[in-house]
Image (tube, rainbow, N blue to C red):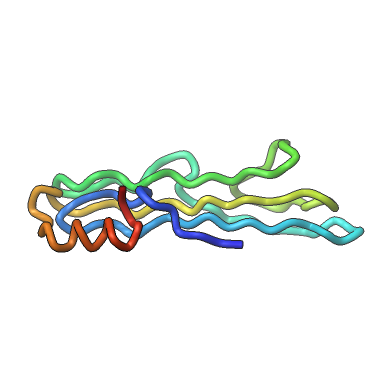
Length: 112
């Protein structure tokens, strides 16, 4: 399953893109080989010219165990892998964003 993450984008005159969350579960009988190349799980996308930072991404596995943000690993039967993709950074001062666009962001569920 997948979904957009409200409040994950950096605010600014130009709002950053929303982060997303998606997951998958190994419902089979055998381990799945996986190659992961993930960015922005230890740092954020930095806002520019007064824009706010985007939300940091994350990778988790249930049941919990160490899982590298980059490299090869396995997803064992019954495990669920959850990716939180980072939000993009905002550009420019949010005070310069039009009220119409801010209201549209609220109506679309991008921000609270």
